[in-house]
Length: 206
Image (spheres, one colour):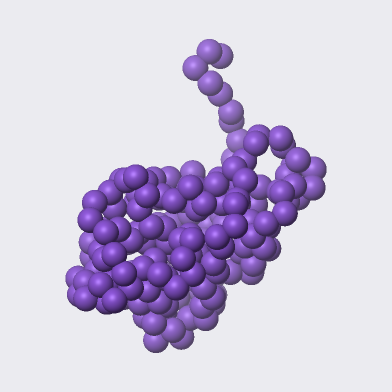
């Protein structure tokens, strides 16, 4: 079993990475394989609604989005991390997840996910809510912890002093590992994924 932890911060080894590493420690202690995937600090185009992914099977734009979607196909769970920018997720991770979930949603479906956020002071719960919406629209079980998945600090060193935040990260890792093992046991016992109905698309006019 493998979990991909996505670092949506422009800083490869900053506060968000520090929090993800704490989740990763708990996952590894439970025998779960991990990979930290950095979105990067180069510009990431937002989704332009061109629909090319339906024909190509991938997003037309060339950046790290398609790399993650390809890795997601063989992964079992996901943790997405973001710093708080203006009481919301970073622009990079927002554009990244818009395109990853729109062009490669099948790679994420029915796989457990969670997000973690890093902030200096405020805006964490708004960002946490924002990122969870990607999972709830994608048939993904959301893994919880003992508190909202947030750490506080302006530097990695300060994050390491947030004892409750770090414990929340470890609890999240343990809960993710437990759910993955439950899913694996269910598969072994013959429990099948829910059957999907044909999608009904409506709006408020018709």
